[in-house]
Amino acid sequence: MFSFKTIAFALIAAVVGANAESHTVNFNNKCGKGTPMLIQGPNVLSTGKPFTSNGPLISAIAYLQTGPCLFNGEKCTLVETTLRNPTSPGSGSSSDISLIPPHAFNVAAGFNYNNGCSGHADCTSASCPQAFHQPNDTQVQVPCQANNAGLTITFCG
Image (cartoon, rainbow, N blue to C red):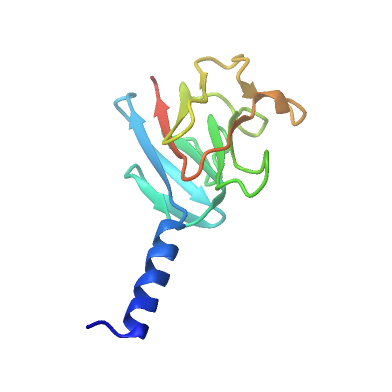
């Protein structure tokens, strides 16, 4: 027979597990060279392997290190992302491609959400309209309002 403490613990574990937030970033490098980088602040989160955040992933950047890229993706095509479950309308995930100097086009890059959203963006040239070229190009941000949304980033796709 189960005790009250055992049943209570099982219920709490089930509720916490059901509400756990998780986001996975995958890479698809079709360039045949370079190393995918996923950076958050001073931390390298991935060099090409899938990365799962158990909770929100705030202000992460990704780029393909082909040689000239600096640590924060300067001199390269940059994908910026925040992946989080929405707590109110419009407060979920947002991703974009940035070519705002000192970032510059080095390889084609794109992304698509998965696990609940179908938004995407692709940048295949230095003049691509789906990228930030100046800070007020906010129309290029791609939102996702699904819980536990993931992102697949493709280089040379």
